[in-house]
Image: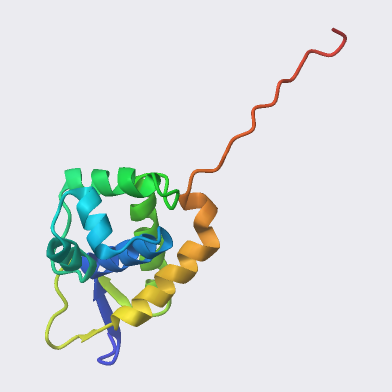
Length: 142
């Protein structure tokens, strides 16, 4: 691997996806933390990739953000993360499931946010609830 290659860990990537979706929901850190019943510093730690959510918190995030019509559920948040990881890998960024090591060059959060935001904006219908129109189809000749 190239010594100048950028690296991002999955905790940071998840956190940056959370930032993009929170902003799309027009929600402050304090407001989302309150809705999730966690402290604002705990949410900040998640967004910075310093910690990862429990399964219960991930579920609560999905349900809370679903109420804001920005993602369908927690799966939408994870799909966004997966799509971002794929794009970053295609661009030569190493996406690792561990902390970035001292000899690796971490990818800047702003750059990660830009990639995630472009994917979110381009794919928003995949992550959000789309109203379904039910058509009634009658039998021909009746």
